[in-house]
Every structure is written in structure tokens, then in C-alpha cells.
Image 1 (spheres, rainbow, N blue to C red):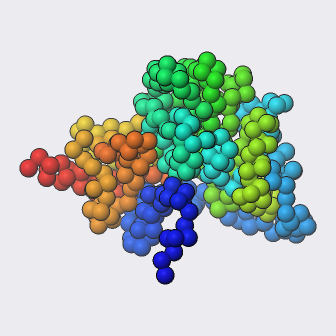
Image 2 (tube, rainbow, N blue to C red):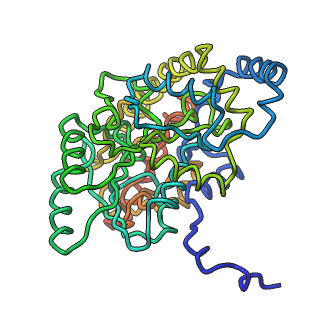
Image 3 (cartoon, rainbow, N blue to C red):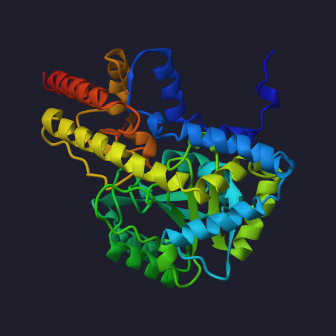
Length: 405
């Protein structure tokens, strides 16, 4: 039976995630997995979470196994407010917080509530692939702003804003990952953060700050959040426990002006009623007992070593005219290869060689970046990183040899 007649035209906007499809391929064969964004399982506090899950069900079962308010379990939200303040995130009297099923749901809520068809929104170029996936069904015009080692080039953004204004258009919001950018690994400089907020005031747009990584950085870096620097209530701040506790709990949050959070709450009601009560109670205990802090510190130690091994291996094995940024935190870096290399076309050969990565063009608003690829260093072992980068370097050399012959 042909079921296409039942499918809404709007469903065409939902694209398969390139990363998810790659993970299926990687699962089907033995490969060194540079593709996903999975934490190292050795960072998971299994025993502590098992004890807390048991105690939560035993002691709070009447509530932890019951429906909860859409904005989140009240005692967990109170714990989250304290956690954020204690970690340098400014929370004002006009702010409110909603618990989401991972920060990905926050992006979906943003798409459903803040974007009308034709609205102009801005992202870094490249940017987080799943943000583009969430935004595109709302049919905005997405403007990509290039990055360098100091993050989004806000001088280019200013030129674009001036150009849009002269043509009678305005920007609804700027979406940014200021610290340990995914996929590029860059971190926005203090000067550019200040400039971005000035532009938001001058051109009257909101800022969506996605912050999965600033809670664990490996080097000295300015991780002051835009939310903390914001003086006008323009920043909606997205966070998650996925990288600092466990992605399987599916606990994230949106912090922002109460008027917006009320709208987010109504949208979430129609999506899933509320995030799992049980995981919220477990997350509450994990924060209050210091398990999240211990997990962050353990992740820092493990990922710093893996990042350094990947950087060393890239320096030893990548061809001339390749470049990348040393990430101060996070799980990824992006490699720019010579322009003759098409990383999407090269991927089948890489998989045959036992290497999975994500072609970089998927992260670019305009699908440029054909010579880029994103590498994850959190999940593979140290030995796999060394072996995988060596194989990748040889493959790139072979491809360049063919291109020149």
C-alpha cells in the first residue's frame, strides 16, 4: 500500500539527521566512531544513579511516578535555579525556567513559538546540525555568519544587519553556541560577546544561547554566559545534563523572560505534557549530592587527555593546508581540508577503512564546507583516536593523489 497520500506536505521539512543515519551504519559494522556526540560511558556514575533511582522510587514514588507540572517538578526547578546561580549563570527576578526533554526539545519549542514563515534568523556558519533540523520546518530564512578562532564574526553580522535593515527586513533572533562550539570547537571572545549584545539592543533581536559545554572546559577560558552579561532580558538560555551527567535521562532546561517561558510552557503541553517526573527527581538528587559535580570533574580529566591525543594525531597525520581550532571544552573539533577534498564523497571509503565521521557540509546553512568534517573525541578510546586519525590522514593523501593525477 502507498502511504504517501496520508503524509502531510509539511512533513517534507523533516530531514533525516545525517548523524543519526551514520550511527546506524556504524552500529552495523566495526568502525572507529568519530561521528556521534556520545559521552564516554566511563563517565556515567552508574552505581550512584542506581542508588538514587531506588531511593527516589522508594521515598518519593507517589510523586516521582506521577504526572508533573509542564514547567517541571517544583523541587527540581528550585534545585536547578541554585545550580545555575552557583555556576555563574545570572537569574533575574523576571526570569522563569522550564524543564525540557533534553535541550533538543528546547530547540523544537523555539522553532514552534518564535519563528513565523519567512522570518529572518541568524546562526553561526557552521552551526549545530540538529538546530537547523529543528528550525527548518518553521520555514525561516536562515542567515549564516562565518566564524574564526574567536567565534562568530560579529563585524560581519553587523554588516548583514545593516544590509537587512536597508531592505526593510529585521532579524527575529540569533542562535549561538558561544563556548566550545559544536561543530567547530571555537569559543567566542569577550569582545564579541559584548558586541553581539550591543547589536541585539541596536537592532532589537533576541539571542538563543545554547550552552551544553561550558560546565566542563579543559583550559583557562572566558566562559561568561551571554545570559549573565545581558542587561535587557534578550537572552534565552538553553542547557542540559546530557553531557555532564547522562544523555539517557533526557533532562534539559530553558531559562528566560517569564513572558516567553509562559509561551514555551503552552507549546510543551501539546508535545509531551511534561518531562519525565522520575528522571527529574533523580537529577535533583544527583545535583544536591554532588554527583553532577563529580561527573563533570571526571569528564574533564578524561576528555582533556583524548582531546590532546586527537590534536597531536592531527598534527602528525593531516596534510598541509588543513586546519582546525583547539577546543577549550566540549566534545568536538572541525577539520578544514584542502578544497579538492569532498568529505561527503570520501565517506564511503572511510567507512570501508573502518572510520565514521560527519561530513561538515551538513552543519553549514548554505551547505558549503564540502572540504570539512567533524570529529568527536569523547567516545573513542585513546588508541582508537590515534589509529583512526592515522587512517584518515592516509585516506586524504590518497584522495589528493587521485585529484592531482
